[in-house]
Image (cartoon, rainbow, N blue to C red; front, side, top):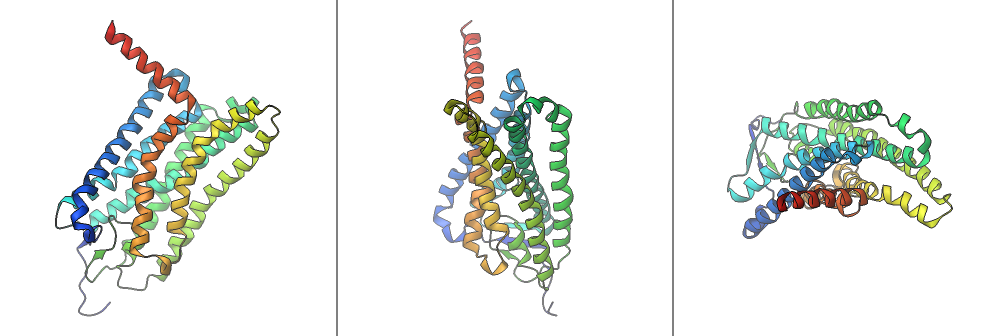
Length: 313
């Protein structure tokens, strides 16, 4: 660190500063998406809570996923909405660290939770006679707890290490929130070790759940292809289609973002992919799990009809 450089006490987001005239429009668009996402996930959680037929392992994990998605988008979007309306888009170093803790913990937890959901589908299709034993309430609680503990332990350690770095210079973050690589770039020391650790953590803790998901679906696909009737194959595949879409959206952007070398990162690509996994993907998940899920749609119709009859009575 140079003699004339002072340590940063706050960061400034460059974010969408180049789109000054469009910021009010972006505010409205992102606000609508945020309200829709939070509202949609609350509906899913409440629906699963009140409908006994949805008290199964698959929907237990879906409740966890919906809660996680609400927290995930809330860790980023409200601050972004404020910054779209104000001239000074700053955040303290402590505030930046807090945002990174929450965001990264939730992100890794989702990786593990999606793997647990894939295992649930594997057991349901490939080991149906042992499903009640292999996916008992106790096992489901352990899988969910393991997902959250892994996220908290691993990402707390990584984020703590990142914020032991000295940050100096202008403190301008070429992003709209405190993501890992844009913040690491502001350090005024050699960050090669940190980058290696970030990459290693990404490979181990993002690719390992991804590998488990792929293995589960290879076995699921083999089992489905052995089902003699076309109707049986369609029914088996339909129970997995929503999860496959969510996994594809989440891992597609996560792998593109965190498994690239530092030289491949640009502010434009970072912001574009970040919008996908912080705003678009959480907004699509409630749609995917309602429009493509027959049980959820039927349960929603029953609850709606029941409420309508009560109002008439």
